[in-house]
Structure formats: C-alpha cells, structure tokens
Amino acid sequence: MTRNHPSMADRFSALSSEQRVRLMRRLVEAGRTQEIPRVVPPRDSAGAVPLSPAQRDLWVYESLYPGTPALNLCCAYHFDAADGPVDPAHLETALTLVQSHHDILRTRISGTADDPRVDFPDEGPFVLEREDLRGTATTIEQAFRAFRRRPFDLTADRLIRGRFVRVDDTRTTLMLSLHHIITDWWSFDVLQSEFAEAYRAVREGTEPKLSRPAIQYADFAAWQGELEAAGVFDDRLAFWRRYLADPPGPLTVPGHGDPEAGGDDGIVQIRFRVDADTTRAVRALARERGASVYVVLMTAFAVLAHRVTGTDNLVLGTPVANRSAKGLDQVIGYVMNAVPTRWRITEGDSFADVLARFGADFPALMAGADLPVGRIVSAAAPERSAGRSPLFQWVFMHLTEQPSVSAVREFAEPERIHTGGEHDLVGVVRDSGDGMDGSFEIRTDLFAPAAVARWADNYLTLLRHVTAAPAAPLRDLDVLPGAERRPLLALAHGPAAPAPESLPDMVARHAARTPDAPALEADGTHLTYAQLADRVDRLAAHLVRHGADPSGPSPSPSGVAPTSRWPRWPCTGPVPRTCRSTPTTRPSGSAVSSTTRRPCS
Image 1 (cartoon, one colour):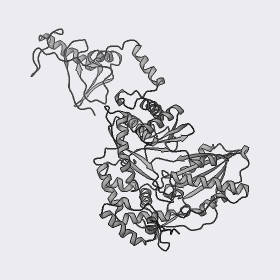
Image 2 (cartoon, one colour):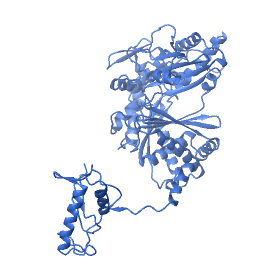
Image 3 (cartoon, one colour):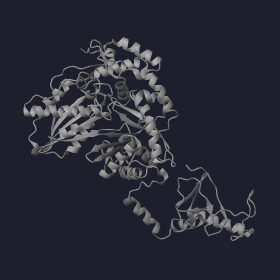
Image 4 (cartoon, helix red, strand yellow):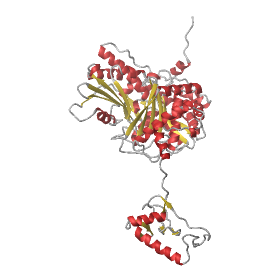
C-alpha cells in the first residue's frame, strides 16, 4: 500500500509565517531563491490584513493624485430585448453571489496613511444604481463616459459600483467600475466568467456551478509581505538595477498632441485588425524562432516605437499575470504586475536580431516579475516628468482569447474600457478567431488621434514585412502602407520647385508690399521694411562711391581675405519677428550685405 507523503509545497505552507520568513532568508543568503515553493500559504486569520506591496503603491499614487479616475477599470454589458427581457434584480442577485465568493470585492480600507489596513465587511446584497435615458438627450456613450470618470474615495467608498441603464424601450446596459487596487485584467476575466454563470443560473432557476476559491486575495497580500520581509524582493532588485542602469528619459514624439480631440476625458482608442494571413505569419515566425506570439508582437511594437520617436534606447512596459503559484488563477485582486523591458535598437539591426535579444532577456524578466513595479521604479531612479508615468510611458500587452467573452455573449455584448491616463500610449492585441483585434489607447494631450491611426497602419505593415523577411536590416523596411506611400511618391513627379528667394529680393518684395511692417528690432532701433530698404540703398551707394563693384570682389571688412565675397543669404519666407536678429541688406541685387546677429528670443 502506497502512503501519500505531503509535498514540499504542503510542508512549506504548514509552517508559521515567522518560520517561512526565516527559511526564505536563509535561501536568499545562499543564493537559492529559485527553490522557494511557488505556493500561496493561508494567512493567519487572527491577524490584521495589510495591503499588498503593489496595493500600497496604488495607495501612494492616490495620495499624490486624489480624485483621479485613471485607476478605474470598467466594463459594460449591452442587452437587447431580442435576447429576452432583462430584470435588474436578476443582475443584482448574480453580482451578490460573485461578491460573496471573493472577499476583495467587499474591501474597506482604514487605518492611517502610513499603515493602511483592510477588512471585508458583509454589507448585504449588491445594489445597482439606476438611470433612464429615455426622454433625454444623453447617449449611452455619454452616460458610460460619465460613469467611468467618477473617482473612488479609497477610505470611504465601496471599490466596486454598478449601474443599470435603460437606453430605450428595447436596449439596456449594465455598467461596472472597479478600482485597480482590488482588481486587474486577469481578475476581470474571472469576474466575468462567474457573473455569466451566476446570471444564467438565476434566470433559469438552477444552482450555479460556482464555489468559493480556497485562496483569497488577503492570502496573497500576506504572502507578498512575507517575501518582502525575507529579503526576496531586495534580492530581485539586484537584477533590475543592472538591467535598467542609466535609464533613458521619457519617451516623446515632438510635434504631436491635440488636447481637444479626446472630449471630456482626453483618452481615445484607435482600433485596428490584424488579418488572418498576417496572424498566421506571426505565429509561424514565433514557432520558427522558438518564441511566443507575444514576444514577436512586443518586438514589433518596440521597433515601431523606435521608428516613431527616433530613439534607439527605450524602456517599454508590459503587464505580466504573475499567477504561476498554484490556485492564483481563480483569485480576483491586484496580482498582475507591469514590468519594464529595455530596448537598444539601431538601423543596422534586423528584426531577427532585436527578437533574439528580447527572447534572451525574457526568462530573467519573468524571474523578477513578481517584484512590484513601484520598487523597480524607485531602484532605477529614472528622470521624472510631472503628470507622466516614470520609467516607461508606453505599454504593450497581448491577450489570448478569453472563454468568459463567449459565455457573456450568450446574453449580452461586452465592452471593456480602461479609463486610462497613467500611461501615454497602451497597445493591446487580442486573439480573436483567425485574426487579432488591436487598439492603441492614447492621451490626446500628447498625441493627435489621426497621427496614431497612421502608426496603427504602420504597425500592421511592419508585421507583414518582418514576418516575410525577418533578417532584413530595419533601415530597409518600408513601414508606410501602400495607400500612404502612393501620394508621397506622386510628389516626385510634379513641376520643379521654385528656386529659393534671396534675402535681398525678399526684403525688396516686402518693402513694396508691406512698407510699414516691422522689419528690424535691435538695441532700441525699430525699422520698417521701407526704412530698412532706404538705409540699405544709401549704404550700398556709399560703398560703390568708394570702389565697391557689385559684380566683383567686395571691399574687405577687417579679418576677411580680399578675394572673399560677402554672402547673399537665401531665404524661403519673411524673417519672423520672433527672431531678434534681422539682417540689413541691399535689396537691389548687389552682393554687398551687412548683417547684425543676436540670439533668437
């Protein structure tokens, strides 16, 4: 008869918190942190529940930006009467059931700013807010925007809220908003799956196939605290300090930005579709290079960022699920982490070169991915810019197909939106059937939507080129789509451009057209174009009387060889008034000129 012996993970979990911390300290000192079991032990139920290290980072963010909606994660479920009537009481019953299984959805934060604590009071059934748009001029898009822009008060509010909206006589919508401190995108899939099952059971009057997960987020938070106390996080920092040494400044694209384009929230999603042929090519390249589809898509995103910004040293963010420990796959809470990825790209590189370097870095990145990003940022000490995320401003993620979407679509059409704003640009590519759906979510105070729509087209073109010729140098890749390239090529076949206008001719033209316009301001002197032309003519005549030849060598000013000619300055337009250095020139065509120069203001 075979006796079942407890596993290493079981024996580790059975230790007290103090014993686990002591054991992990010894493993850290011996350089054997990889031997720490990937398990989330149950917390001591008698002790207070702390915020996890990642939650504390968001707590600090909220204290710096109170009342911000940037950390709201929102979704909507759009119902149509053709699929059957919707009873909001059924929705509330389903959400109450899901809430009873996940303590984190009943989170209340208390304590002091330096020592926040968490409890999970039973506050009764989930109650939806109600709104009726019939007879109003408000659209469902406007209602959803207003709903998701409402901030949470972390010390006073329930951190999940819902609203039932009657759009018209046939359409209704359920909106949900959760603060990031109690959820992440993986958690949304868990929430959505359980809500779909609970709602189905309530409508049909059957028992839902749901159960309370053995691991709750409070267990994970306590476990993260033990890792921190044992020095595991400090050990992880050594890698990140090396990897991110001398980080570059914030990623910028000069000349872009349209603060008015995004409406009230200044956030716009630019959507695109990766077709079936390109999707197959991406997957084939991933198999050929021994990489994941994510690694190929992320590398293409990095090359696009390199091309758009002109920067060859970049740091881009990428979310990781951080759920390798047994049982974490069904936990709702802020488990996910966003980690920085370092890119050094030159035009001499091929896509295969950049892909290989990222693939080589990837295992080490994942090994350190459980360290909260706030600790990584502090260790890297990047240049900071007010109102912008430090260390990385552009983020990319690849999402596989989510079974919960299919389950929800049996009764509603889901829509998921991140209110956004803490990052400048977030690229998302989701597997969808035989292709992929993508979006670039942008801050419109930094980027013009029309420009980013072109970047999306460039990304698609780039994917097609690099999958067809991964070894080609990046400098040889043409990322312009055909529809954009053709008008540019046509410009080469038009009439010749006119020769640039000389500065003397320009001054003469403006003296004739706008004689009273200001032409020169320097050291208290103010001359109009007419006055400037008159003075230049008188000076030129004076020089000719003293032997200057307009067609030959000019008299030499001090320090200039007699054979040199004084320059005629080409000009393509009027001298701007903002430039305080205005040349005085003879506009009659003479080679004689005199200039005074001062720095532009």
